[in-house]
Each structure stands twice: as structure tokens, then as C-alpha cells.
Length: 166
Image 1 (cartoon, one colour):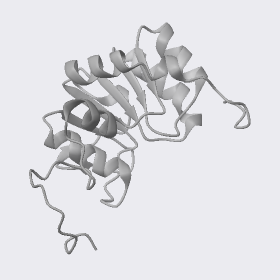
Image 2 (image 1 turned 120 degrees about the horizontal axis):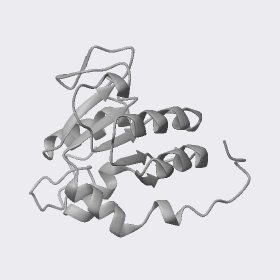
Image 3 (image 1 turned 90 degrees about the horizontal axis):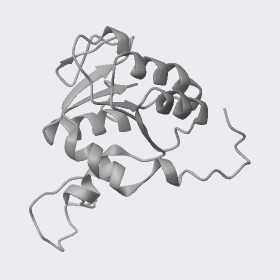
Image 4 (image 1 turned 45 degrees about the vertical axis):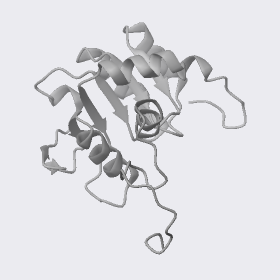
């Protein structure tokens, strides 16, 4: 764990070319900490990714199904290959998740906004994984695939009418 008062240079984990490569090559994304609560960011990100053609695999030991997909208690229980492990957990959980990501042969460890753990990044990198840290996969997908919209998705409608945005 890192001292919150120390300013970290995370630029090596936020490289635009790496982010674009991951987004364009990944097919299957396991979301660790995916919630069944539709008001949670993890649920919206999972929904968004499914809607944009990714295979989303929920990982949450408290659930059996999320977003219509079988939910697994851990990464090691997933019976199919995973391209990206997306982390919606506390930073202190990242080293164990990184070790599991290496063990299952994932290509990328993606830590969401605010999820920063250098020990976890080291474990993943030493295991051959690309590491993206302190970035939202949904925001980055929207930015580079052209689906950015104020409401979080592209409505295919151009309007200045504000009555629907209350």
C-alpha cells in the first residue's frame, strides 16, 4: 500500500497506446467486485461493456448471477480464458487479485479510478500482464471508440432540449 500523501507518477500505467490496444484486442473482461446494485458504478460499467460487445464475467463471492451472467466467487473459478481483469475493489485487495490474474493467464490488469496499488502492479507486470491503473474502462472506451456522451452513452440524438435532463 502506498502513503496517500505521496504523489505518485502513474503515467506508465496510463499510456494511451496501451489503453487503446487493450480496448481493441480484448474480448472477455472479468469484473472483480461487480455489483448487482444498478446504482453502483461497477454495474453500469459492466452493462456498458456488454452493450458494446464484450463478454463480461462477474466476479463476486456474494452473488450467483449479475447482468444475466453466471457470477464466480474468484478469478480462479472462471472456466474460460480472460483477456482483462477489471478491478472494482479496495486498493489493498489488488495484490491478491493480481496474483490470481497471473495464475489464470489474463493479458491485462485494469484498476479502476482510485484503485492504486504499486505492489499489485509489480506482481502483474512480473507475471507478464499489461497494467492500466487509475482509469475507468468505460470512460476510456467511450473516449477512444467515440461513444462519449454527457449521459454516459451515445443516444444518436443531437438536441439542446433540456426538458428530459432534470
